[in-house]
Amino acid sequence: MNLQLPWRVLVLARVLVIAVVGATLASCVSSRAPVAAQSRIFTDCEHCPSMVVVPAGEFTMGSPDGEPDRPETPIRHVKIAYRFAVGETAVTQAQFARFIAATQYQTTKGCGIIGAGGYHVDGDADWRSPGYGRPPRDDEPVVCVSWLDAKAYVGWLSRQTRHRYRLLSESEWEYVARAGTTSRYVWGEDPDGACKSANLYDQSAVKLAMPYAPANCSDGFEGVAPVASFPPNAFGVYDMIGNVWQWVEDCYLYEYPAWPVDGAPVEVLSACPLRSIRGGSWGTRVDRLRPTWRGRDPENRMNILFGFRIARDLDGAQR
Ligand SMILES: [Ca+2]
Image 1 (cartoon, rainbow, N blue to C red):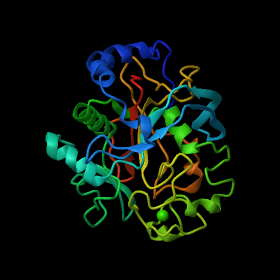
Image 2 (image 1 turned 180 degrees about the horizontal axis):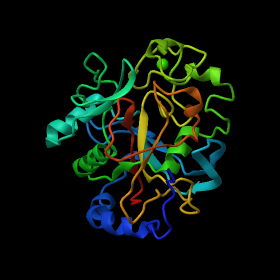
Image 3 (image 1 turned 90 degrees about the vertical axis):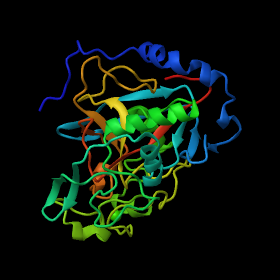
Image 4 (image 1 turned 30 degrees about the horizontal axis):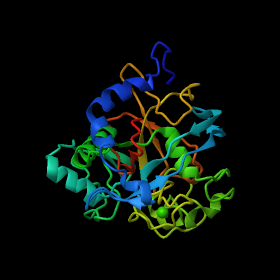
């Protein structure tokens, strides 16, 4: 399938985002002292996700190692000239449950799960019952949530805190995942080195009998792991790679467009058929845990391996 979108589907000018969002949030953000100004890690309310301040910076995005139908090119230089905050972990089951309780937001049922015979959609599965064969733990990342559900969550959190919460852009995600590394994997060049850094499809999980080879190491988790079960990266952020895939803001384009390269997300003026999702998961083979690998799925798709991570603007920025 050719996923390349016609160029009449123009990338939205960021000014549109500023116009829409700024109208509602500018006064709120500018009237409050930035919580993160003196702190590298902060929360905006008692039950809000813990946020890590990530510095401005630049990096090389992309790789020549993409699969035939999944390019990670053209490789380009991205300069993120602003600091921002990113969720220290993926959004947890308990954090998402609080959102549901406060809003009565309705997710839909029908989630892709892993069972006998591989993947199938379970019509009764949802974030409360994601097909683990047991209830999910409060400190596990919420899964069986769509991109639309993730957007609803950050909208609610923004209204609650009067700060602008959002999803990461795809380039911000890769910048945070790399955290200054330049190797093929964030842990180095050796795929067998994965298990000290990430929960993936490994020797602990051979019973899953996925249709590809497990990594040649043991991370100790057959399925999902509680958040922050593995060491943080150099930015102090946990689980950017592995455990659950993380929805990002961007509309997926088959190859990267020439613009934006300033940290802004790729948006299109028409309906977006696929959203980018990053990081790999406990059911993912190791070569897809490279920080440049790009997943893409419809924005209403739910999967036992799909969760999300949030971001927040700082310094009055409204991206
Ligand atoms: Ca594992």
